[in-house]
Length: 181
Image (cartoon, rainbow, N blue to C red; front, top):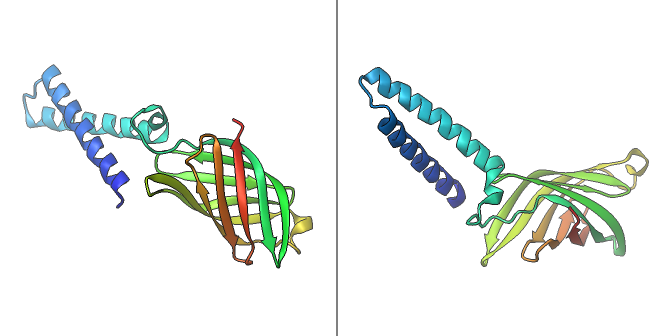
């Protein structure tokens, strides 16, 4: 379990404890039945709070260090396949919660989707790593078949992502994206 998850669980337990104390101060427990009922209420409310926080509210927390990358980007991918270097325009959509990130890249030939992605802190900056699978349009599937790839994007420049990628077909390249929404 990584530090971010441990910290989140610890904070969730503190929220539950505070809610339990507040519940006790509002309505004292007269029996074990009251105690168990209050515990159930507190657990339910805590689960709702941490669910909302991890899905939506984290992005409004000024103390949360996780970069907020969700949105739509346009950019250019420069790729090298078999010694031939070419460029292509791309559109990228990033969906993000506190603990997950999904990246979808669309070009004129393919759409690629995240298999797994993670923001990793390296040397006091966050790097987005993700592994993806491509889904080529049928008319391009022969010369550009399904492939797997990995991408590394730097997130330290506001509204811009810059990085590199490599694939199972031994294609390598650079990506530069600018946030539009």
